[in-house]
Length: 455
Ligand code: TYD
Ligand code: MG
Image 1 (cartoon, rainbow, N blue to C red):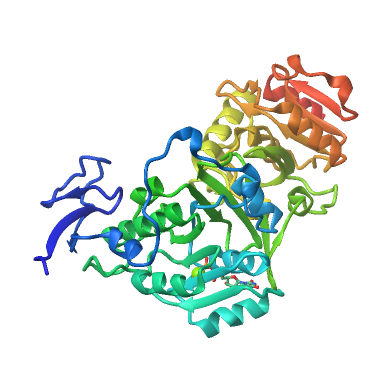
Image 2: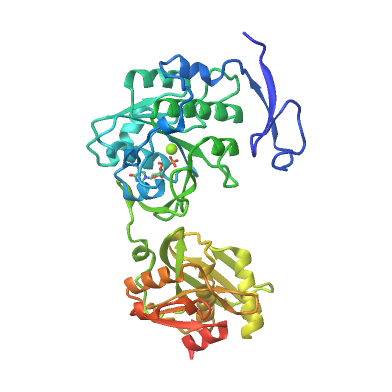
């Protein structure tokens, strides 16, 4: 046996060095190097070669065939949408998310609903009994789903040999380890090696592999920028654990668009698809409540209507409090400064609390106008009709700026039965207004929107 070698790895990006470094030359982070013992003689070839997996040989590109309809449908519309229409054979898909968000539930549920394929669900986190308990919560009639609790990749490949699955699920990549490396499970070199072994398996056999990955405290996938390079698709499962909504988005997808997004709701019996999220996100509110405004946002390529709620009250203490839930705090400060400077509202002596209903986080700048209007509405204590929605960005001088794909937003507002939509004047130039029944209000500065709404 060769003498064990040790290397230093950057926790952030996986950069490998033979000596300790204070600053990573790859990603520029400080103090991220950790020592790991690596036994790197035969590496991943061992696992694959021993188990009857054919090694690849060069072929002419003309001779390589594939057919688009070979994608395997997951029987879950939202999941398929994010994948770009089903699982591509031979692909390696990483699903990341915070603990408890529902990654295991999503994949077990998918495994149980794909009835026409043989599936091997490997869990390094739960025993077979625990998986069964979870499966019992999710109603299913699957006949072809095998489960096994295992952490060694060598033994996982043995199980693959005996089951010969059509789809492999591994929960989670941080808990499996390969014998070719000495470092402990979850270390960067282990994650990299195991991912490479699964990649080799997926590419040579055409069996798709779905890997679950954990997310670190700072919100990045644990271990692995290295892993992101190896896999074909990186999907992120996110949401507020206190709310039922879960969003699945593609951060990388070699076989589909990253603009797509799937929305689920965590129910007592597993995850339920939400085909019309706006209906859930817009609360059935009373017209007499001030401080609420509806924004027509786009999440990826999909219009989602959300309710922005604000509370403006006199500050009791010297420094006014500001709080934003689901919205960028610095952006809120900027919008408040704009309202103060351009609209003459004395918000400096007021506490401002902002909340995006449903526990959703929004990055679309088109929400700006709704945020400003909800703050103004709470400030003057005049409600905005729930039949009005908005889609515009605010500039530093209080100008209402155009947003992308405004037609799509208006069409959706029209479909959902809104009476009015506020958009930027500069957006509506290219608009064919006759196409819509909804009244389109064009504004160029924030004062104009204010006058329209509150006077
Ligand atoms: P889980 O899939 O274990 O999360 P992860 O694998 O991402 O860590 O999901 C855990 C949460 O989901 C847990 O808090 C319980 C909840 N849950 C339900 O609400 N309904 C269900 O049917 C199931 C299976 C889980
Ligand atoms: Mg889990």
